[in-house]
Image (tube, rainbow, N blue to C red; front, side, top):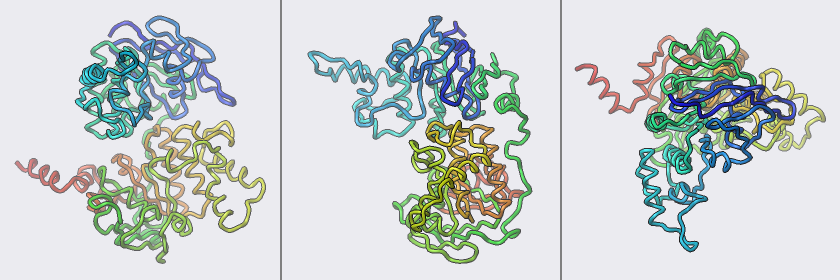
Length: 516
């Protein structure tokens, strides 16, 4: 490793009602990938925003290549060789790849863009990140993995030597993650200092050389080398307590142990041919039972939940709740029947970002008041929101805090609090812990267990196989729009579940290979 290219010295940041950072100090050397770890709300995002010039620190110093810096804008940070690659990429979809790469410093002559030079320089920069995209391609047509490579290439055109990645794999496929890791390792070989933020422990040990843990805005530990450091040590540093079993396994139960709460039968989607539910889907959930749905991308898992809830139009099928068939053609019908959904995309489908915590919790109650023509009692909204915040452990300085300023885990708790204000019979959850740290995950699981113990039927979708196996009483597997397997907890092993999830041809190839 080379010289230290980045150092935080006693960095502090205070917002009204909350100290986001309290004296954080650590450094990152050239030729090093340094993990930045901590629960949601630990201060990681605030630190990255100070690094990129979005926020100014209220105390302490930021040093880049040995020089004290105090960036006022992202442009100033880039000029100093610092780039932050956020989850939400800062690209202009309507512009071409080449124009995005050199936006702000396009090669021109007499005010006219020199297209030949622009495309040649863009192609050269794309090769650095292993891409062969035609430089004239509009960015909006590209998949998320390629857009991320363009964001990295854009940073490199400005000569960035310090790069920070904020949860870069949250929306990537396994192949795209592998390619991203290759690029990051190449940047490390070239002497760049990499600060890597992730909740995925497997990525920390596969990619990172060292790491720092934050908790409640304060520095807890720095590991100069991750060799010999265990996941258990890091988790304990993150949450301040031992988590022997993050899933908090409860005694499994089957649908036969309780009344059948939900029974979607022979459901089919209208959707595009070849996508979504291609064949009749038949699932059951017992009272107090937690059923996990697993499958590969495109298996039809999300479509199944939306069909049950009324968020997608049915071509065929019916839904029964407590043995009675219910009419659900829109989400309003699902809610009326006691079926609620926590969507996969929290920011787009689950919250009103500019709304307060109190407003987001009471959205459904307001809807009921508007439909029934009966206003909500004065003071009820505040009382209800305060109760949900307290019982779910939502971390917020005030009920009037805009929900967009909360961590992903706390946003998810607010959505759950909204539905707990309803008379819930069946809770549907699509990727309930995506992008959430290990401590918040444990909190979410405990909420689901309490719901089940109260008699609510829980049906959740997850692409995290250990999560499905650790939380569900029964596992349903989907493949290519069909249900391909079902296992009680005692029967569900990673091998059996994956065999049911793999496309038939791949599954046959696996079996054939093992027989040779």
